[in-house]
Length: 228
Image 1 (cartoon, rainbow, N blue to C red):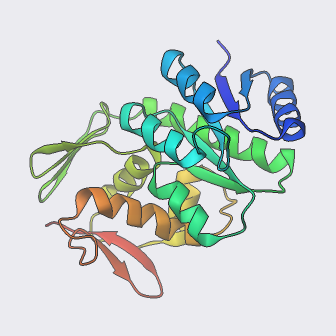
Image 2 (image 1 turned 180 degrees about the horizontal axis):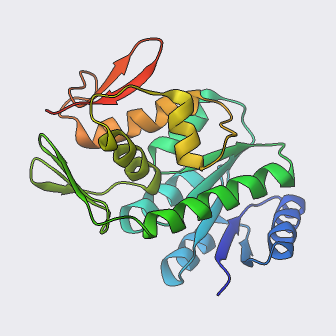
C-alpha cells in the first residue's frame, strides 16, 4: 500500500504544488489549509508522514506538532517561511523530525520525504538487541526507552539519534555523521540542526540538560554518549 501523507499549508499555490508533486511520486495525499482541521484529521486517520506549515490559521504548526508528538510517532516535516534559527530549533524541540525553509524546491522536499520514509522502514526492520548504558535502556525492536526505570516518549528522530550514540558508547560522533544517519543521506543541510536534535533529546533523558551527564559535547568534534 502506498504511504499516506498529510500536507498542511494555508497558501493555496504551495499546497497544490506540494500535493501534486507527492501524488506524482505515487503517494496517497491529503491536503488541508487550517490547523484545526489538520489536527482533527491527523488524530482520526493513520498517516505515514505529516508535512506541516509553521504559520496556520486556527492552530499553529508548532501546537499541532506538540499535540501529535504527545500521542503518535508519525514523522513530521515542518515548513517555515522564516529564515530564523530560533524557529527551526523550536520546530525540532516540539518534535519535528526535519524542517524545510521557504522558498524550497520540490526536488529538495521530495528528497527529505523519501529519506524520512526510508529511515522509518529501516527502523521497523531493526534487530532484537536490548542496549543498556547506565540508567538508560533502549529496546530497538519496540522502540521503547527507559530512563532510570521510567519510560520516556521520544520522537522518531530523537530515538534514532539515541540509538546511534548507544551503538558505540564513548565514541565521538561528528555532527555530519549524525545528520547523515538521521536523514539516511549524504546530504546533511544545515548541520546546526544537529545541535537542536541533541538539545531536544537531552531535555528528555538528562536530569538537568544545562549540565548534561549522558550526552556530552566534545568541542570542535561532536557528541558522545556515556554511562550515567
